[in-house]
Amino acid sequence: MPEETSRPIRLSRRGFLQTAGAGVAGAGMLLAEGASQPVAAKLDTEFNGQLIEGAGGVKLYVERAGSLSKPPILFIHGFSQCRLSWDPQFTSDLAAKFYVVRMDIRGHGASDKPPDLAAYQNGKNWADDVDAVIRTFRLKRPVLVGWSYGGFIISDYVRHYGQQGIGGINFVDAATEIGSDEAARMLGPEFLPLFPGLLSDNAVDSMAALQSFVRMLTHEPVPARDFYFYLGFNAAVPAYVRQGLAQRKLDNTDVLKSLTVPVLITQGREDKIVLPAAADHIARQVPNAKRATYVQCGHAPFLEVAQQYNQDLAEFVEAARPRQG
Image 1: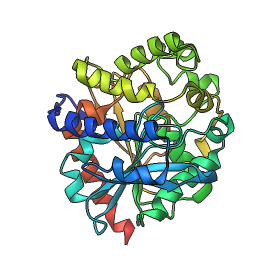
Image 2: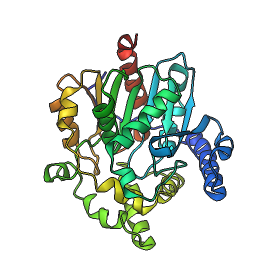
Image 3: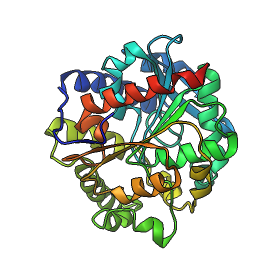
């Protein structure tokens, strides 16, 4: 596995946009009808998806592709995003090699959005949500892939459930610390000023901040259709959800130091949201972790350099398979 990739490999967006459009249409039906389980079938498009029950009865929307007999990968998206972020993986040959599963975390996408901020601040809730997906879909020692805020969620899971149920972890431009000066220094100086707008209940302020945030996800500008697609599912997240996520205070150094499962740290060198310093922090706590650093790449390597990322992830999962016996 390369330590560094110097030439980004761009993914064709045709299939990405086709599946994304279908998913957005399905999510729209869920929001419009305001129902729960009966709408799940309408959300099924190219992938097999359904609503399941997470912590506190919160309904989580989960999709999967591939064969249950293959090694499982559970993809966990980041702050204000949704499962459709992982389309470049679900429309690739990863779905033929592995059993790929992706969830809309609570408050996002087609999952429930409880109005109580405490629903997003209790680490046990996040851990129980991940456990519910693993149990419901019978994932045998899955590799957990956590993008950005997904680093907190994976840490919550390990803190409450340990490592015995997973085969490995891929931290993707991930943060694991929040609520301290040290943690703030691992976030981009251009990103931090966006927080008042991202957390605002004022629609104008919120949309302005979200547009800047979405532009910041990638090192190079994306086509307009991709930009507004991402902006759409970011805007579908209520401001109170982002408030709940941002108000947590976490020091997961002890969790990182405890890790014995294989770990891959993926980082875009030009990330302006979660700085490479965050990847360095994880690496210091997990000295045996493997690293894949992509130059000319920002916060979303699974989109920006999708082919190389998919190859590196596949190699990592295959290498972790003996631990899943």
